[in-house]
Length: 352
Image (tube, rainbow, N blue to C red; front, top):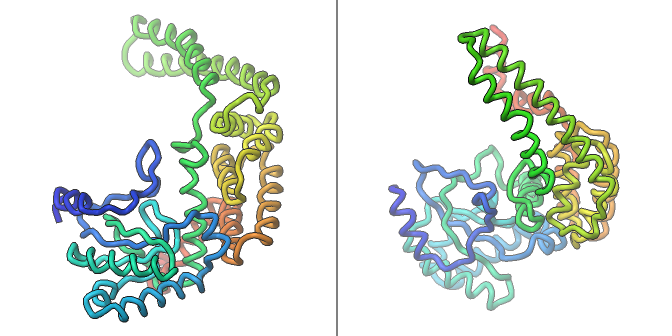
């Protein structure tokens, strides 16, 4: 289907738009060669989902919508047929129900279904088009997959809430400006000098690279000294929450004053899943290689323990899923991929 047709279909929708960051929808992967499909998602804050809607409740919602569609007549039942519990994909939180066979003619009966669902107390639902391919996997409608979806929602749907609009997290504005000045002062002159140097060819390239490397080392030494000084000097209470997160990310990268800044970055966040998302971002900022790692592990474990009194078992499992995934080594991830090979594929790889 042509891209223009997809845009035309989307213009007819009046459901709430997917959450977006400044850089676009966080998890959106546009597949131009795939037909669009319809997605229905429960219009609930993620905190409410984590507290009240586990996998069993999501399946019950699916069955209630099926029963309601059948009660409303064959046209609505036919429009609803084919929807299944799936990955929330482009910006929605679990639970979401998708159907890649849906058509524009299905919109009106589906809106009738969702209006009746809201009127009868099943919940407020949103209808939207998606360009993403359907969820794959041998058993998509499982508790394990639902927990994984919840974990994705926690990881990625907090970008806008936390004021983080890209990964890796930006430097604090003052430190970015300071290092930029150092680059202009120490590296700019080296580059101009090498441009005028009379040598040519491979030797000129190698000598220029070495000169720039030494200049960058000087910039890095000077910049880190100022960063460490500012991390100790500044009072987090005097800094806006989004900027605190940037200072916290810098602190964990340097392994300096990280307890002070991590606690300060957490303090304005009202929900446990937001604090878990913050730790996910901070961990990712240093790739888990930092003197701050034991502290972040301890904080994450404390959040999981607190969640046991607030969230469903699936919600707690989603937090644990994120924590376990962060602690996995790259080799563990590679092992997980190779474990999915079929026996005959593995035999061919081994030369049998």
